[in-house]
Amino acid sequence: MSIYATIYNAEMEPLTDGVEVATDAEFEPLEAQAGELAAGGQKCCIRWSRDSDGQVAYWGPKGATLKPHWYSKPGRPEQMQGGKRRNVYLDDASWAKAVELGNGNASDGIRLALARAG
Image 1 (spheres, rainbow, N blue to C red):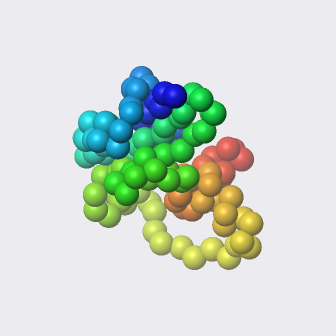
Image 2: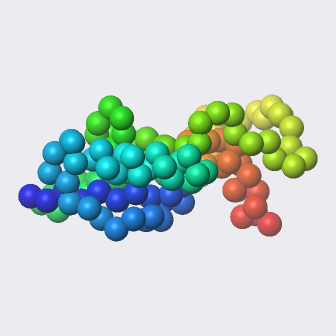
C-alpha cells in the first residue's frame, strides 16, 4: 500500500510531483514547502492518495482531513483596486456554491462566477 502526496494550488492544479509517504513525519517536508509557497503568496494545499483503494484526502497541521487545509500568506488579504465591503443576500445553496467556487472564500467564488458570466 503506497500513499502519494502532492501540493496543489487554489485551482487544484499540481504544483509538485507526487512524493511517496509512509508516516506522518514524512509529510513534514511537504508542509514546509507549502508554507514557503504560501509565504510567497501562493495559496496551496497538500492532497494525498492511496493506491490500494483510491482514497483521496488532504493533509494539514492536525493530520489527515477530508477538506483541504489551505496554506496561505498570513495576515489580512490585500485590498483590491476599487473594491469595498458589500453585503449580499443569498440562499444557503447559493452561498455554498460561492464557497465551493472560491475554494472556501465566498467572495472569490462570487467574483469567479461573475467573471465566467462575462
